[in-house]
Each structure stands twice: as structure tokens, then as C-alpha cells.
Length: 78
Image (tube, rainbow, N blue to C red; front, top):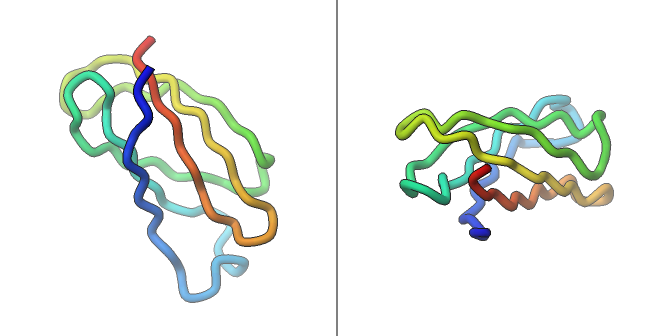
């Protein structure tokens, strides 16, 4: 398991944007991958993303703070 660096691209008013952009590092090759996150899908989300650099499948767990809409991401290779 690898905890990744998270970068959230903030909008002027996050509540006006339904989809939010975030990035995580692939635990295998450390390449930055971007994903879109929809806060309307719930405070906890999980998905599998293929790394755009090495092609590994990465399990991405997303947590969203309901008050601030801050996104936290934990990623690990499958």
C-alpha cells in the first residue's frame, strides 16, 4: 500500500462545480495521474484507474469532506 501525494485543483467556488479535478501518484511508477471526482457520488468512493504511464491498475479510494469538499486520495496497485 502506498499513500500518495494529493493535488486538488480548486475552483473559485467549489460548490458551483459538480465535477472536481484531482491528481494522485501511481504507487508503481510515481507518475501523476488526473481523475475527475463527483462529490454528488458520496463522501467515500472507490474506483480502479489504469496508470497513464505504466499501465498498472491502481485502486483509488476517494474521501470527500462534506463541509469543505476537500478531496483526499489513497492509491494502491491491484
